Length: 452
Image (cartoon, rainbow, N blue to C red; front, side, top):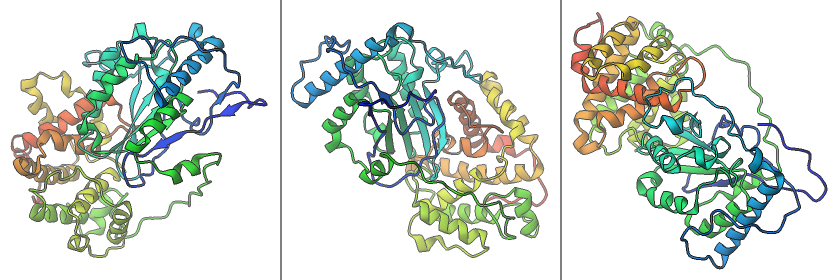
């Protein structure tokens, strides 16, 4: 996205507004997308023409009053600015094409625009979902009902775990704006299922209309004033990246399986995996929501430091069953190469094109092509996850739920992050491994392998 013009005399800037629906202080990596680099300020012309009739009015909604009336007035002003700038006449949806998107995707007509994207993980391993209004085509080219269905379809893959949403408001014009009635429907659709694990909602490039709505709903949403103060009018601090250091002899995180094996007297299962799985098997199999919850970022860093220094870790000291669960996921996520290897990424994406009755056989073919060490570690992990799924009546973690958690911790592309369209085959493949563990893994045994 190109930078805006220099601020003229009398012009005004609108800073980004961070909304915090729950406690905690997640640290978000810069979300890639069309609005990257524009989070701080957006210039708007100071002159406001006379109000025009809003396309959001006359939708069967009762006439607003008080603070709501101010919101509608600001909405009219925003739309008048759009009309004055001539953007309605020249509006074009930015070209975007998801090269990994299959034309048979159930929401191909919406997904191809790239409005909703998985940006990656924050520093706590929580998924960050972005919604970019600038990628919305004119309303006659987009079925907004399908857009809402696709948004729910996307969030359904993450709502059982902690996640975050970044909403880029820039680019929402009269020509591509959904109706107010649609917004009311969307608000009713997103019940507690979607709100309970939403750890942060960030609104970038808010207009006066958005700010007034925020004031209306402020009592209902918790907000981090300190974060907003830091964002307002201040440049982000310059972070000096130290030169890379050689790993410690006892390093467990961020090093290859081979490195850990060489430093652990040839043991095939990394110590951190063996200890977390052993602890969770003894004390966590029937814990509701196992692997869904996050833990204290500082505590996770402290435990990682202990492991990297070769010191013993007693999870009983932390009184939180989710800490070993997060440590296990973090270990997998920080491997230099995914456990399923980069080479398996494309074959795994093709699992959805395989006939249903042949998918387990195809999974077995892919898994048996793994390097021996990766195969042994994967078999150990999947065996444990199969045990967890067998207790789903208590922990509510079915094979499908576990696949949503572990899919992207087991496999990711060599460049960038997996697109939303890739999540379906990645999660399906992981679910098949867990559900059909015995069938897939029993035909290959490696000398020295162990199971939980």
